[in-house]
Length: 339
Image (cartoon, rainbow, N blue to C red; front, side):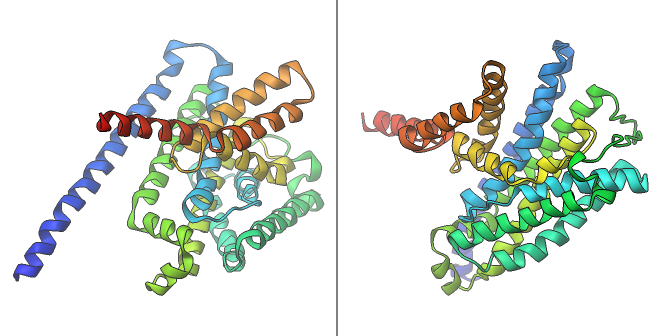
């Protein structure tokens, strides 16, 4: 080994060690989070609370997957909700029509989603800024219209009726509410952990480079189109996971799951929580569902209230809540070090 090679090795070892340490820390945090969530039914009999966590699991996976595009790659998608709806309908139809085991339907739905996302993404990621946003919206409206018009297959505007079969597998019975709750928590934690690893991987930093300066990234030899297409497909898979959780929760699928308002809610959630921190969309999900559930109890004009909240975050904080907290903490640390 030459002196130059030895020097390179010495510089790389701390970096690799740091990455490995961070990975183990993320896994440990994920395990602790799952244990805390899974043990919640032991301490409370509130079905409403468990239902809330299941909904947070579905929307959290969806919103965090959207942030892979918005926050990490700089791709603002107005049609990301199509994959949430595709996951719900794909899973529900496979279970109703084919009566296969749930894990098989889960994998088959992800496979279908990956193929559809690859086709749509191959077209959309070539476009820039507003054109990308509106073409994704156009594809979402196309899928939503297909769901409505193909009533013999999808149930049309009535959605999938008759419930989703839930045969037991590996000792797990999803017709049992507690089993469904724990499974939803497991999917949430695994999905967040996987997305965290993607965001912190070399590929994740490549996405940041593309977000900051795509021309420079291309000049450095990065295949920008391929990287964008890859993250587009990955984000679609995690959004479909959220759709499947929601389909199991409501035991069906409805056209609203693929309507443009779902994508709007995803953008709103990211605005609430923040896009520069990984857990921002998860915080935004909790805030959004709490706000929505609370406001709808007192007024039917909940849209006005949500609009005021958007203005507060857009014009007041000018960033999501977790972004604001992170910047405030950073300033406090700098002030303390300065003293």
